[in-house]
Image (cartoon, rainbow, N blue to C red; front, side):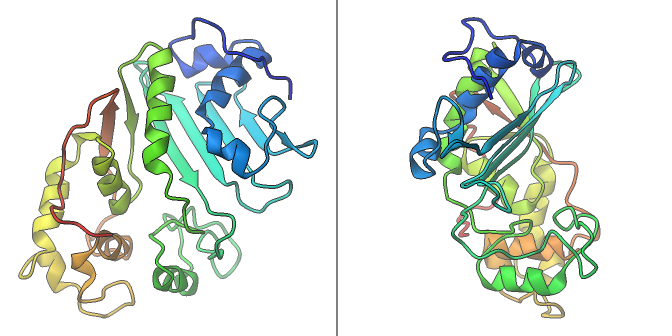
Length: 270
């Protein structure tokens, strides 16, 4: 992969604009999303994005597209990327981060992404692998995780902020896929475009005597009576359908350099 040594001095204001640049320039822009520790920890050449001469970074950003995907593997041929990023333009040219995954490649893998027939579960949104989910729960993982993370999310947010600033924006958007994602984003300084009242309602109903608390009856491994006490416990119960509907309709944003101070689960522990 040919990569320019430096990004252009002026960046386009949209993913579509970046994708329409010559390959070397857009790859140089997108590689600014890679944290310095990735290069050193996984012996990735910062110029060629290879390890021992073999490519370990894939950037999917075709001209004309309003989306980009970037995957980083800790070694050639690895089953899961150590980092995956998917971003798109919204219709009003804001930056929407659809998904960021950071895996610890040295941790055990739990195949929650495939059902018993080997079909994709789309991380539990279209199917489930209950035995794998139970094992992941018992290992301390949250819904949607095939492996433990690297606890690097807090250091990753400033990298995104710098990327957004170079694009000429002062904020970016995210859509939390699960309850624990929303709480984590709150801790990183995000605010809600929509969903804050529902998050506060969820917190109230998880308190003793509340509607959600009453459903923590031990009827499944994900509805432990003590699940309301932790972020991860609540998230597994919600993943298990305790809301009566999917966890959707939550939209958040991060203003560059600003911590919103939102906390819908006071005193939360993971």
